[in-house]
Image (tube, rainbow, N blue to C red; front, side, top):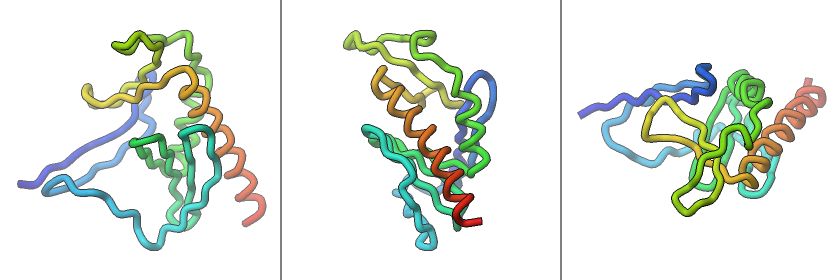
Length: 139
Protein backbone atom coordinates (compact mmCIF):
# COMPACT_ATOMS: atom_id res chain seq x y z
CA UNK A 1 0.00 0.00 0.00
CA UNK A 2 1.31 3.48 -0.86
CA UNK A 3 0.99 6.42 1.50
CA UNK A 4 1.38 10.13 1.01
CA UNK A 5 2.28 12.42 3.87
CA UNK A 6 1.89 16.15 3.69
CA UNK A 7 3.88 17.85 6.41
CA UNK A 8 4.27 21.49 7.19
CA UNK A 9 4.69 23.89 10.02
CA UNK A 10 1.88 26.34 10.68
CA UNK A 11 2.21 29.23 13.06
CA UNK A 12 -0.34 32.00 13.46
CA UNK A 13 -2.24 30.55 10.47
CA UNK A 14 0.81 30.94 8.18
CA UNK A 15 2.12 27.86 6.40
CA UNK A 16 5.87 28.20 6.87
CA UNK A 17 7.10 25.09 5.15
CA UNK A 18 5.53 22.11 3.43
CA UNK A 19 6.66 18.92 1.81
CA UNK A 20 4.95 15.87 0.42
CA UNK A 21 6.48 12.47 0.99
CA UNK A 22 5.51 9.28 -0.78
CA UNK A 23 6.32 6.03 0.94
CA UNK A 24 5.29 2.42 0.87
CA UNK A 25 6.36 1.85 4.46
CA UNK A 26 8.13 3.88 7.10
CA UNK A 27 11.89 3.75 6.54
CA UNK A 28 14.78 5.87 7.77
CA UNK A 29 15.77 8.71 5.45
CA UNK A 30 19.31 8.95 4.10
CA UNK A 31 20.58 12.44 3.36
CA UNK A 32 21.63 12.75 -0.28
CA UNK A 33 25.32 12.06 -0.88
CA UNK A 34 25.78 15.31 -2.84
CA UNK A 35 24.71 17.23 0.24
CA UNK A 36 27.66 18.75 2.11
CA UNK A 37 26.07 20.38 5.15
CA UNK A 38 28.05 22.95 7.10
CA UNK A 39 27.32 23.64 10.76
CA UNK A 40 26.36 27.31 10.97
CA UNK A 41 25.01 27.39 14.51
CA UNK A 42 25.06 25.35 17.68
CA UNK A 43 23.26 26.27 20.89
CA UNK A 44 22.52 23.70 23.61
CA UNK A 45 20.84 20.70 21.96
CA UNK A 46 20.15 22.68 18.77
CA UNK A 47 22.39 22.41 15.74
CA UNK A 48 21.69 24.21 12.47
CA UNK A 49 23.37 23.15 9.24
CA UNK A 50 23.01 24.39 5.70
CA UNK A 51 24.03 23.13 2.30
CA UNK A 52 24.68 25.68 -0.41
CA UNK A 53 24.50 22.95 -3.09
CA UNK A 54 21.03 21.74 -2.06
CA UNK A 55 19.90 25.17 -0.81
CA UNK A 56 18.51 23.68 2.39
CA UNK A 57 18.75 24.41 6.10
CA UNK A 58 18.46 21.59 8.63
CA UNK A 59 17.49 22.37 12.21
CA UNK A 60 18.44 19.46 14.46
CA UNK A 61 16.79 19.28 17.88
CA UNK A 62 17.32 16.03 19.78
CA UNK A 63 15.17 13.54 17.84
CA UNK A 64 13.55 16.13 15.55
CA UNK A 65 14.96 17.23 12.21
CA UNK A 66 13.27 20.11 10.38
CA UNK A 67 14.36 20.84 6.82
CA UNK A 68 13.71 24.17 5.12
CA UNK A 69 14.61 25.77 1.85
CA UNK A 70 16.60 28.97 2.44
CA UNK A 71 13.44 31.01 1.79
CA UNK A 72 11.32 28.88 4.13
CA UNK A 73 13.96 29.17 6.85
CA UNK A 74 13.88 32.96 6.73
CA UNK A 75 10.07 32.97 6.57
CA UNK A 76 10.00 30.77 9.69
CA UNK A 77 12.35 33.13 11.52
CA UNK A 78 10.29 36.17 10.50
CA UNK A 79 7.02 34.51 11.54
CA UNK A 80 8.35 33.46 14.95
CA UNK A 81 10.76 36.24 15.94
CA UNK A 82 8.21 38.20 17.97
CA UNK A 83 6.87 35.22 19.93
CA UNK A 84 7.46 35.45 23.66
CA UNK A 85 7.63 32.31 25.78
CA UNK A 86 5.54 33.81 28.59
CA UNK A 87 2.66 34.56 26.20
CA UNK A 88 2.12 30.90 25.30
CA UNK A 89 2.88 28.87 28.44
CA UNK A 90 1.29 25.46 28.83
CA UNK A 91 2.17 22.82 31.41
CA UNK A 92 3.77 19.45 30.77
CA UNK A 93 2.18 16.63 32.81
CA UNK A 94 5.17 16.82 35.19
CA UNK A 95 4.39 20.51 35.84
CA UNK A 96 7.20 21.95 33.71
CA UNK A 97 6.34 25.13 31.82
CA UNK A 98 6.47 24.55 28.06
CA UNK A 99 5.44 26.26 24.87
CA UNK A 100 3.96 24.10 22.14
CA UNK A 101 4.26 24.99 18.45
CA UNK A 102 1.55 23.17 16.53
CA UNK A 103 2.02 21.50 13.18
CA UNK A 104 -0.76 20.81 10.66
CA UNK A 105 -1.15 17.36 12.20
CA UNK A 106 -2.98 17.29 15.52
CA UNK A 107 -0.70 14.47 16.67
CA UNK A 108 2.58 16.30 15.95
CA UNK A 109 3.72 19.38 17.86
CA UNK A 110 7.04 20.78 19.00
CA UNK A 111 7.30 21.35 22.75
CA UNK A 112 9.95 23.59 24.32
CA UNK A 113 10.93 24.32 27.89
CA UNK A 114 12.01 27.90 28.57
CA UNK A 115 15.71 27.02 28.13
CA UNK A 116 15.04 25.02 24.96
CA UNK A 117 12.94 27.89 23.58
CA UNK A 118 15.71 30.44 24.01
CA UNK A 119 18.39 28.04 22.73
CA UNK A 120 16.26 27.21 19.69
CA UNK A 121 15.70 30.81 18.68
CA UNK A 122 19.27 31.88 19.54
CA UNK A 123 20.52 29.10 17.24
CA UNK A 124 18.17 30.24 14.45
CA UNK A 125 19.32 33.87 14.80
CA UNK A 126 22.98 32.80 14.73
CA UNK A 127 22.31 30.63 11.70
CA UNK A 128 20.62 33.48 9.81
CA UNK A 129 23.60 35.72 10.60
CA UNK A 130 26.08 33.06 9.44
CA UNK A 131 24.12 32.60 6.22
CA UNK A 132 24.60 36.31 5.52
CA UNK A 133 28.35 35.94 6.15
CA UNK A 134 28.54 32.89 3.88
CA UNK A 135 26.68 34.68 1.11
CA UNK A 136 29.02 37.69 1.30
CA UNK A 137 32.14 35.51 1.31
CA UNK A 138 31.00 33.17 -1.47
CA UNK A 139 29.39 35.67 -3.82
